[in-house]
Length: 319
Image 1 (cartoon, rainbow, N blue to C red):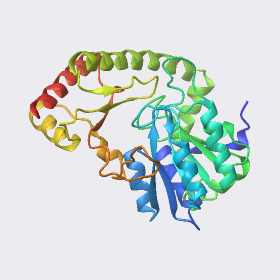
Image 2 (image 1 turned 90 degrees about the vertical axis):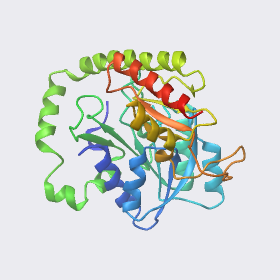
Image 3 (image 1 turned 60 degrees about the vertical axis):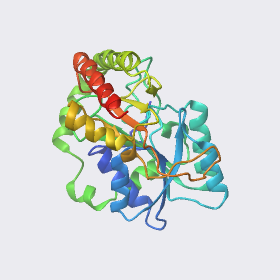
């Protein structure tokens, strides 16, 4: 059971991340983000005047060796922003052991972790995953979940989970106190859904739909895009592509939209603009120019098959 005093209603993850960043960065403007990461997080943090530093993300999540090297050198952020489960955009999932190591680093070097977790319950091969905050007993980690991804888009309702002390700290923000709470009408509607035990059956149905759409996307990629590399995700919304050497993702997007009627999120949009080579923390140039994020959450299976064929036509046209 989760202690109710360790939870707080939020107006969705974007607002919650902005509020937490504001609270946690009052005396230190240094922030670590994953590279790549959710592209709109960059805008949220920059609007607050924060100094962003990228830590590369691998197939198992953030590179903890690179992170530890930064910390050991004395570069301590106010907080790390992470998407540990079914990462946006890569689909990576941090194991329990890696979660424990990340929390241990936060406790050793005394920095906070903002954990963006909208996809935890969308594990297509099993049960939902525990929050990163469940590995922490210090209150340095705060996890944010969202009903927009598991119930209905546009609800702008979610929750924060951390220690009682951290939740109290977050709840003192002026806009929350002035408004008397977060999205009370929507919260009442969602409360009814929860009270009547309607959410979990809905999530099961949603997972079956997403599973079929993910399978459609991955099978089409294998069939039509032999020069594109990707790792099939086990949950969430996204497939992260490694494009052929001759393709620049931004040029591909222009051609794909203008001539082939298909679009995607270019990898460059998810990047701070730096890339790491085999040596920890060594910059080698402009990042993610051969990467692209596809989402399988919105379109039907037939539309996905058509979209992948159009994408391959666009890729081929750049040869």
